[in-house]
Length: 493
Image 1 (spheres, rainbow, N blue to C red):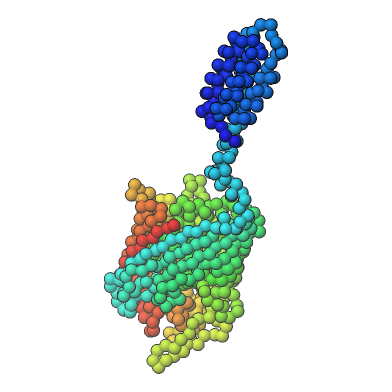
Image 2 (image 1 turned 90 degrees about the vertical axis):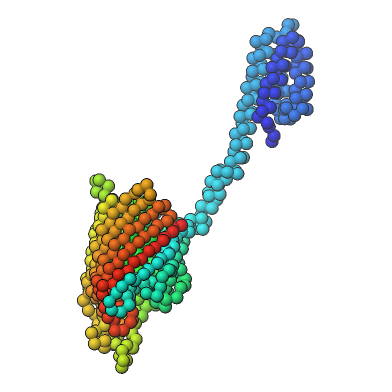
């Protein structure tokens, strides 16, 4: 189908000329002249074949009588010509509409059609995102053995630059009832070896029982829903690492298990807003979560066939002035199988109870989100594996600890500023360390995060360790009065 909109003027002029000619001729002569004129316009390409046929037919319909005794008046001919022009304009509008619809197939309309055709294809719902943390650490001074920070193995006097985390995340709602999440990590240390490598961090599915996804099961390797800061992504956290008091419960934060989670639509929206608005929320792990997990840590097989059981409840309140406040409690129980190796000279091999050592904790969290001032506070108590003072046995001993963090969040013309200070305290065994040595941490962090753009963040942290046990090497002595600084550049994509 061909048509040139700019030919309309030519057609109107041609018919105007035909009308003037018709005024001076008899009806039959005018009809003959009209037909000749239409043929000329068709042959010149001003009219399509279909338009030519339509005009001839219109001319026949407007023919009043086979012969007139007098030439038609100007008004009669003008009325007839107006009818023909109206018909042509109607045809032109229909043609323009058809052309517009065809054109749409190459732009927005085609995208909608493609999306509609692929709406049931799972790969159309999967997104790729992630972040990288490039870090520099330096220990200025210390008393005692080399400083050991289990949560950050890059804190070494012989280390400087390194990639602390390189996360790549594939996730998405495959259907109304199935959400998939997979996260890999290019990490500066894998399994405590000190070597770089790629490892699995998360690989789980959320299976929703309803379309609103208020009731769901999480199955696979995921974060253990214990505490609040353990669930907060490293991408959102201000301090460089999690506090030992909570992280010692689940180093690496993850394990293989299955959890049932419930959260109302209102609560789920608030969990998302706390992250989306840059308030450093922990994410949606349900208002209530109960379940069981291996208990031996991420990427490790179960060692006793007895899973840990867990329960957690945490609710994000929103006050009348828009201030968010979250309050929660959590607890778990199980038996942990510690890693045992010979220590000392002469060598001693600690003995642990068969089937594992009793491992249980309970804690609370209270979070006043930074709008602009914020406070985070968590504390947990319990008992867990701990090496005896004579290094001969590993038994279940009392533990306790927590942290308090003050935050301030301010948007400026130079970007987002997030200064913070944190006190971190823990007294108890480090069950994930070899031989589960006793550990004592008492330290203070002072830091600031600057984000000139959403995709780039820079953090500077000074840490004063009043006391920190070296749980990496025997005889597990304390390092005192250590001073270190950490700098981090993070880019998000």
